[in-house]
Length: 133
Ligand SMILES: [Zn+2]
Image (cartoon, rainbow, N blue to C red; front, side, top):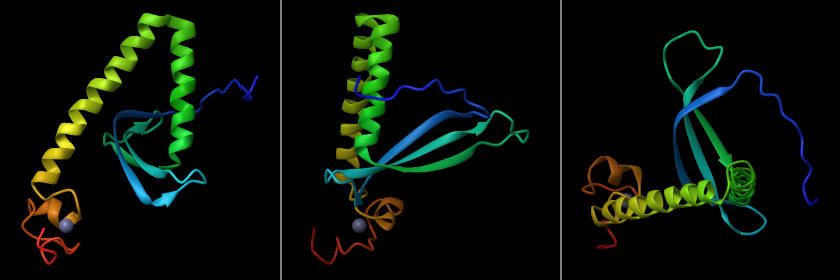
């Protein structure tokens, strides 16, 4: 057994209703991979006010890969091969959709800096216009 398994009993869950992710080239793990910035939208189970919170998580990509691998193993064990394939197909569909979105953002000049994103590519703080790109 390569990993240490533990039975975790969650207390006050953060119930995430939605999530976003972004790679962070400035933060790299010892494998040299860019980290990821994960944003979770939701609320604690104990929360009484009726407003979603954002949880910001910076995570090494290798840690995410390990977690996804563990999730796949548990889906396979508990629900079988077709359930795992369904999950993998769902990931592939989202990857294809995101690839189109990222290409569109790039074509619009909105993928390089916050100013470019907010002004639909007409203004930049990254030097994109100065470089004549
Ligand atoms: Zn820019």
